Image 1 (cartoon, helix red, strand yellow):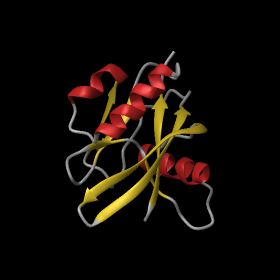
Image 2: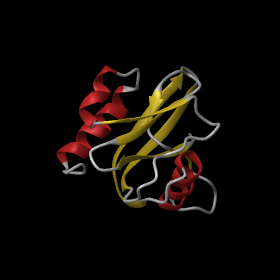
Image 3: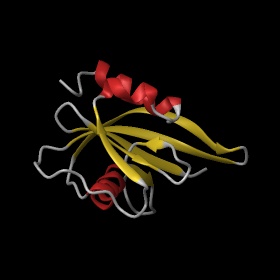
Image 4: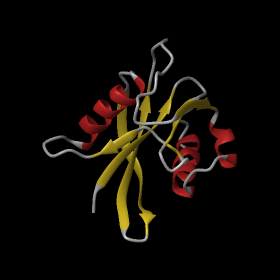
Length: 128
């Protein structure tokens, strides 16, 4: 089963979300590469997907996501923070990027576990 690392990134009171090829919103991140730690993978993926150098902290939420009946992925979510001034610039890997407050995610087409991960980040004071 592939492993994907994702980040709930706090940029002030906003977080970036990316629209994938299935027209679902998702957190920045990607598949774990051989020879990289999960935090290294996440730092690299965020740089590739958003152009940001972030501070990645601890993993705090995990689940198995069923992409299709025959395809599953283990998702490990980390907290991250971006303290720079430059807005994100999304890569060719995604169709769209939004910056939202955490309380705006419930209305989006997004797997429930991503929403749960964002809500838990709020409960932990990540956007305070």
